[in-house]
Amino acid sequence: MSEEIISKSRIVIAAEKSGCGKTTVTLGLLNALKKRGISVSSFKCGPDYIDPLFHREVLNIPSGNLDTFFTDGKITREIFLSEAEGDISVIEGVMGLYDGIGGTEECGSTYDLAKTLCAPVILVLDAKGVGRTLAASLSGFLSYDRKRLIKGFILNRVSASYGKKLGRYMEKELGVSFLGALPFDETIIIKSRHLGLLTPDAIEKEELKNKLEGLGELFEKNIDIERMIEIAKGNGEIRSTITYPEPAETVKLAVARDRAFSFYYRENLRMLETYGAELFYFSPINDNHLPDGIGGLILGGGYPEGDLEALSKNTEMLCDIRKKIEGGLPVIAECGGFMYLLDVIEDNEKRSFPMAGVIKGKAFYSPKDAKKRFGYIIVERGKGRRMRGHEFHYFDSDNNGTDAIAKKPDGSKEWPCMHIKDNIIAGFPHLYYPSDPEFALDFIKKAKDYQGQKK
Image (tube, rainbow, N blue to C red):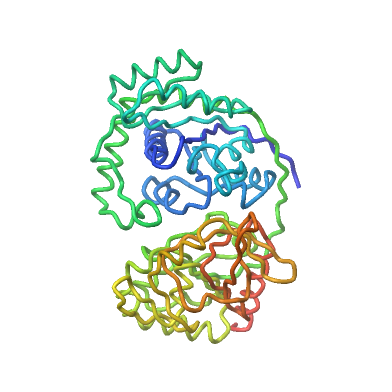
């Protein structure tokens, strides 16, 4: 065990609400830092998978998730310290700056994370169709900022000339740095789907490259990047005690990763590796069988509904997965991965596609019912075991499992969830392993036992 001081430069990109341009500014800043030869890492506040995908797969920047609902302050700082690579960490916020659990609590908010990491905040404000009134809005944000973390602001969706005029007025009036104004540009907008932005795989590569290059140029031209770098360096020190585990005997885990299955928390995979896992990635769409010699299988979330025909036609892979799980292979399957293990997935036109048939039942498009279980949850698995996670899906099934109970954090609602039997852990909840490290340890033990039996 050792105590370390976090002194790396870091900055939080926040906003007054969703849709104000946090992702645009984050991607623009990451682009700008890379062009300057600055080594950078990124994080997403909250449970979102897609923004980190863009950081990792498009910009080749290490990215993770930090969430003060999933983990307390100490563990959150430990995760940040272990993953903050390079010279600067850029942390993209979620929703509005002060929006936490249920919309009324601070826990889980961007501001709570900024406080936990003693990180300066840059606020993105939507300036379309508004003028001096925006100064009143910013004044309100500053009045809530009891730790004085807001160090600057950027105006979005406003002409460069008017944005500069309005921004300088607000800076003089309120004493907080105006960092620039971004005009609206249709050509750099990244489209969205029902769970947020389209994943990088869903956008034509050349189109995506052009959008990001255009964003980079727009950012360089209109934003005071050097001032943002200075602000990132001016954070407070925080201390964290980290326990380094003993090296463990390794076990091979197969992890599904392609355009259908891409939703993984970096922290979950790193925890599995810490406890002895070697990760071998494979594609349920393109490969014919699981990697050889594995002791366990991870089927993450994603958008299997976008590739149902390809998944269903790959009968060799479906058969291999079914036979190995029936033979005792330990598996964790979340959301899209859980749907893949069912008998059938029915698309939104009610066409049925056979799947692995490990778990009896059918998945089907049902956004009205599925959204009733949207958001943060605490999963109780019996014997006092509790784990944190979230649900966010537009498909449902006729056999969601009854081996655990999902509860809303405020206790307002609960429902049965998940199949947890023998070697199978499957259901719609996305689980965050650092909230219950024993979960990962138990799975690794099962995988080692299985792998040992097969030798």
